[in-house]
Length: 120
Image (tube, rainbow, N blue to C red; front, side, top):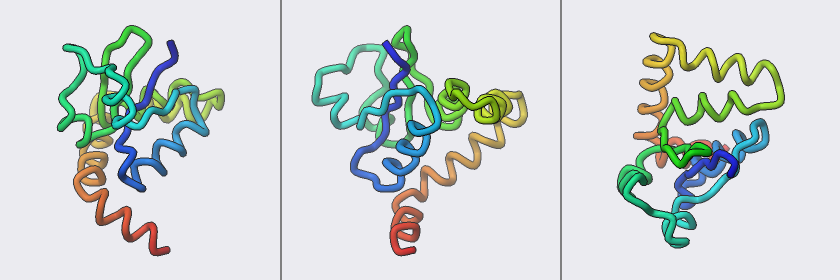
């Protein structure tokens, strides 16, 4: 099983970010609505509310990580060395905290930011 990136398929900004990651990495994209409808929810799956709040990565073992860490780990699967370096760099203590703060601000404002991006 490939690593699977779960994102809010009803959010244009989330879809755009997921498509961007998918084009640069070796992760498989799955809208979380499809994931839930397919009956993939187990006791290890984050709640649907949490799934809607952040992007999630399910690794080959079925474990989940979310937010900036999911993006960082996704980038480490890139065939391009520079994306792997960025992904690994995002996991360095201190850098990971900054990346998570930036991610949280974007995630909380994704509807507003998505509307702004869509207008341009």
